Image (cartoon, rainbow, N blue to C red):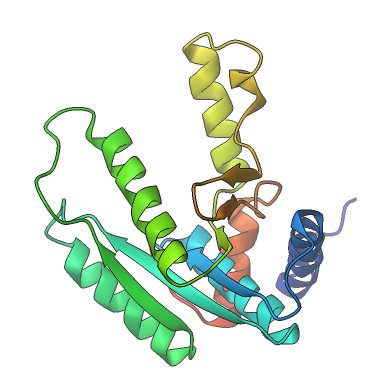
Length: 195
């Protein structure tokens, strides 16, 4: 019989997997300043806690970036909740607003492009070279299945890349091998809620 992993064992394995993923992205500057896209969902909340520990050990700092798309009434409330959580953890937090007229068609894609542009521009203005996003193994599987259904070619079926170069910074996905369930166990153990 296989012994189930305890929450403590999950946390230890999670830190090891995260550290290995970050090492593969290196080298980083001696005292890295790293931004993290934080929506407040379980994936990004776990990511910000992992990065906060990883960066502090290296004498750097982490900045949480939350994009307010202004598309739903709840968004302002959700960004305030995330800000409160970051303040309790003493993590610097910035809200980036998507202002102006919103597109009438292809909204999801346009919102994603606007989000990455806002983050990329903020990184340029604050000289941040690396921004992390919380895509997980679950997201990777979902991406593969959606592309398979659309009959993508072999390149498309490769899934999300762990590294994506934006204009001003690198977008890094260190959680692509980690399951959402393990991230949620980690958050529960850390006493951290999510949206």
